Image 1 (cartoon, rainbow, N blue to C red):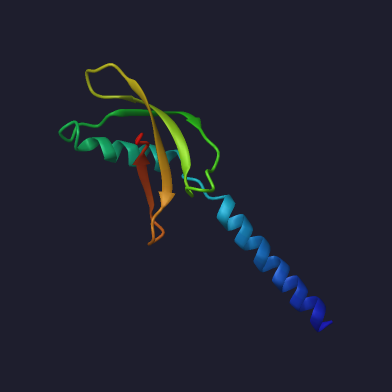
Image 2: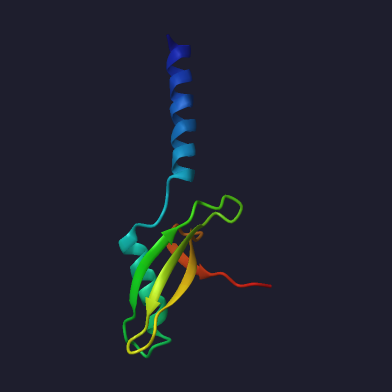
Length: 101
């Protein structure tokens, strides 16, 4: 009976670790808020309009989620941009732009 309990405990721990590593992604509200905050500096504190266009799949090698947005600054034409969402060493969600080279 004790072996069964230990086996079940080990299986549940392995399952929870696996689920925890692969199921995290930023909520829509969190992703939009982070992108809006990112652009506040570039547009002198004016808020940009942000809409999620597409969510990519988790990139295991980089431990991040790509999310494509339509961003429309005040009084300007909108554009598309992909940001990558990841958890920093403290566990907080951060974003990064894709940069070639």
